[in-house]
Length: 240
Image (cartoon, rainbow, N blue to C red; front, side, top):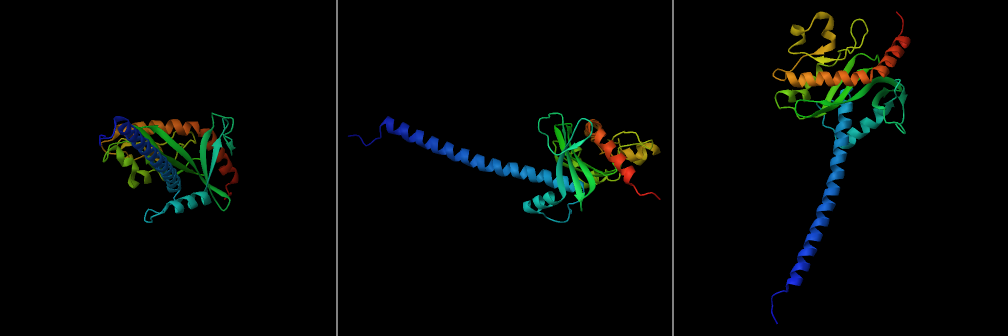
């Protein structure tokens, strides 16, 4: 009798090894996918918190720290066609996602998800506005494909900090959005519009242009709810 295994045994052995390897790879992929999805979700939460100033740049936060901070301070809502704020998006496909930051049951600011075209891919982040419905309190980016050192500067603190204190309405209280200047605001923008622009990135004019157009389109969609915040703010503002 030959000591060599028959072709049948070789086939069976190969089949079993392939099956086992496939199962192991599938199991590993499933575990890694779940972990990856959780990390993506935590990164989003971190950027929401960052946009309203609840993240200290000098502090290293664990995933559980981020989740706890988010749960304590942020609530997810949806915006209806007339600017009404809803707790659920059931049975509606035209609702907009919105986050509210409340402190001691008082609304501090609201956060709008940003997803727009960049030069090389999508730019995703969050823009936070004060409860006055017009003043920006923060901007953060968690995903982009812009060129490092050029358009990629949109993820840097110096660029994002430029948004703080800027406004989406002009001195006539009309919506004008927020835009990225071609150069420095003080050199390129007229005095009456400086509150509506942030400094541009040298060598990244197209990234600034795409981001400006995207922010304008997104903020216009949220304008009805922003108007409501402005009206509530004026109505509840203490008189001098």
